[in-house]
Every structure is written in C-alpha cells, then in structure tokens.
Image (cartoon, rainbow, N blue to C red; front, side):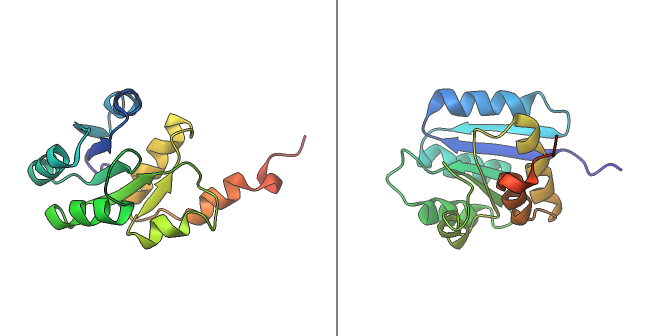
Length: 144
C-alpha cells in the first residue's frame, strides 16, 4: 500500500527542540522533511514554496496566537493539515487549539513512533482525537 511520502515542515521558535523533531522525521522513509522555520516570516515563505502535507506548529515563543499562526499557514497553503504541538493533549484543554483550526494536537513528549503514526493518520484523514483520550485514560493500560 503506497501512499507516497508525506511532506512535513515545522515552525518552532525553540530551535533545539525543533531540530530534534526534524531529526525524527528525517529518519523516517515515509517522510519528506521540508525544513524548520524559527520565525513567522521564513515560515510563510517556506510553506508557500513547499506546500507541505503536514505543517507542524509549536505556538510557544511567537507574538501571534495559535489561531493567527494557523490562519497564516492556511492562507498560503490551504490544503496543508495543521498539527499543533501543545503542552497537554488532555481534554477539554485542547479544545481551544482545535477551535483555532488545528487538525490534530500532539505533545512533544509523545514517543517519536506515536508522533509519526498520528501524523500519518492526519495526512490520511483518519486521525481521531479520541485515540489520544483513550491513551491518556488510567483505565486504558494493560492489566497485569
């Protein structure tokens, strides 16, 4: 089942964290890493040039709100799916990020394989934020 490579790029003002995230994506054969922007001006130009399948946004460290960052991205690449990295993925806190236009909210503390899996689901249109709720539920662990 070949779906082609997913073009991914990220906006992250916290340079070392964004670079680490980029390395995760660069090592995956199904990802075409389009780069990391650390300011909104270069982000706009990069998104315009690459038209990524997935645009990852860490909204911390910018003067703009998450909604403004999402709107900026959608204005130059309307078909890009938006994944916002947030401090918590617990409901109902994430509702504000989904209301801002995020297609998915993920946390950087998630295991890289899980992030890659969710990014793939976002691209395919099969992401269900309920899966994250189940993962966070104390009752979802395996009984020993």
